[in-house]
Image (cartoon, rainbow, N blue to C red; front, side):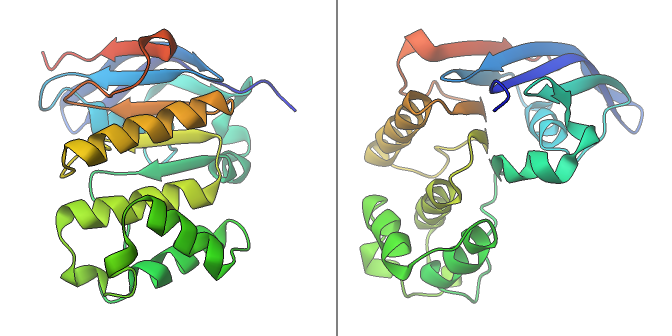
Length: 209
């Protein structure tokens, strides 16, 4: 198995006439978390979308396990789980149904496994309710349950603690620490420091100038 390592070299990205990413470079290894910081408009979300393969940089390369992600984008997508600022949940499906179809695309899932992760994220009371009836924080917890179910080594997270209370924010830190302990990697765009051991943290600050 190739070494788990995500590396970006000299990434440049424009949005219209705005130069969003300016020579961004970093490397993240198995067991490490890269926290991306910067003010509004600094390009945090754009960088995550570029790392996910959704957006194409005008210059630079992204490699996963030493190979350019564009050489086999489908295989790369099979190794990552990306949760944007808005959880990718269908409003008219229940929490259970969303996870069955969303995470179930990746691998076969038993209902008991879905319910176990929903329970761990504190979703027992609303697991059978349509997503449209849930609060923003409840939706975030459902999305995090999906993150666990996808069992991907690379997590790309855009503000993973958004809309969560203090207990939920601590839980996110615990989930990340456990993932890193299993040899996973995390890249997270944040406004507030994640509650994760500093020994496994790398940092990248983007400038909006």
